[in-house]
Every structure is written in structure tokens, then in C-alpha cells.
Amino acid sequence: MLRSDYDIAIILGAALRPDGGASPALLRRVAHGVALHQQGAAPRLLMTGGQVRGPVPEAWVMRDLALRAGVEAEHVLIEDAARDTVDPD
Image (cartoon, rainbow, N blue to C red; front, side, top):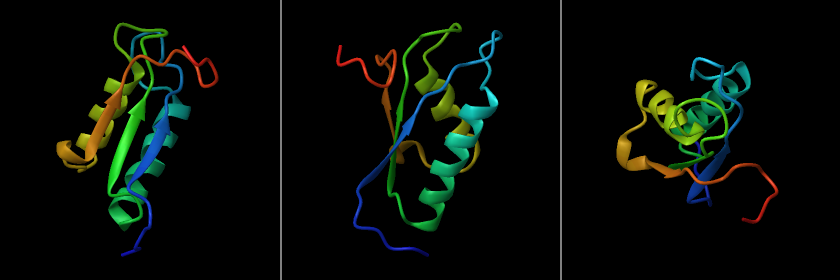
């Protein structure tokens, strides 16, 4: 198991499919974050992404993916207001 000096990994959202499911890019990002968590490199995961396309915010889809992959709910944080990576609002 890896040790980390980091408290959290930030997983950036990516567009959802028209049906609200995760896009390939989103699946890859979450899978990488889950792997970091499972290796001990990221004790917590911050899922970030708002409701840009689709019926729910990207962050909630990401959370569900992480939980299904075995990450405990208390290790997943949600930020569901972001609409893009660079906009400060």
C-alpha cells in the first residue's frame, strides 16, 4: 500500500452521456481516483462537477461509481456546483 502526504484527490467531472450515464472520460477519471484510494495514496476523494448536461450533477454520478467500486461513503466528498474547470463562479 502506498503512503501519501495528501489528504484528498480531486476528481474533475466530465460530460455525461445524453441518458445521464458516465462518459468514457468520466469513467476513466473515477477509476483512476478509486485506484489511488485503494492504494492508500488518496485517503479521500473529492468529486467535482455540476449539472451541466444530463438530469443530475456529474459529481453524484461520480460518487455512485466510486461507491460501486468499493470506496466507503465517508471517504467521498461532493462539490456539485462547478460548471467548468476554470470559471471562478
